[in-house]
Image (cartoon, rainbow, N blue to C red; front, side):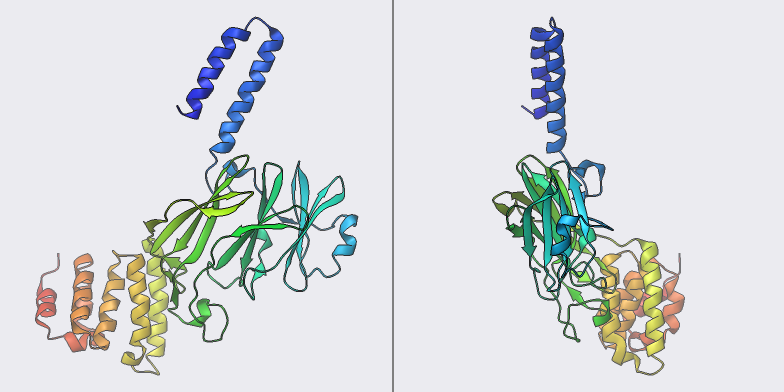
Length: 366
């Protein structure tokens, strides 16, 4: 029997027994309110910013910290942030070693003082992305760690119980990284077409009950730094209790498509870079980099004719005749108008006499 059906049965039975007494009726109303609110809390869904996740609170900058913390903020290197609730107020900052410091205050007294080290070297606390919630009487702080603002999606989240000196409950798995030429974390400056797998995209609080919280993390099967997007993603559920964090079930794979208007804008930037570099370098020498870019673009937007056409051009420059003809043929099937461009495009010179391409280019435009 579902929870809502149980509520209806309890309501009906209770009303028959208690309808004669005003005091009993008041107690009955209170019981119904508690049951309904309990169901609402157990069926939370949606991103943290949605109304359904009001039980979680964000950390906001605080201009003036309370005096009781004055002696503990001497080594703070970030503004103090605050997250309040009826069960206590959490104050947080970053110290000079890069560690997160969090204090729980009740009645202006410190009842918990935790120090959380970075999940990985060179990561910084992202206080705007950090939030707190309560599992029964246990305050939990979900600390967001990032490499920097220019790093797409790379984030770790550590869950800490704010009791005593702090208790680590678990962390969401870190991303796999592509090496950067500069030796640091990957970002859009590491190369026009850098890609990596397993990059976290977002995290949402999907449900909160009295003794457990459910999270859904979306990660990229392949993350394309140039486009700040992933064509294929997967979602993983996690359950967090006072005992720790565990995966809940297998990951679910999903498909993600870039909107066509966005793809049209991105291809303009790619072609602008391509023709600029072609003035000082040979087109075959720069083709491998741009082939990767255009392949990623059509992976994100499979029905984008201009993307397929430029994949064909790059293949032709590299001597990949079969792939070049297949991509140009795909582009012409989506947009016949490219026949006129293809007949005179110098990038397709190496496949100009290919019988299949000749046949396709000779077909009348519809």
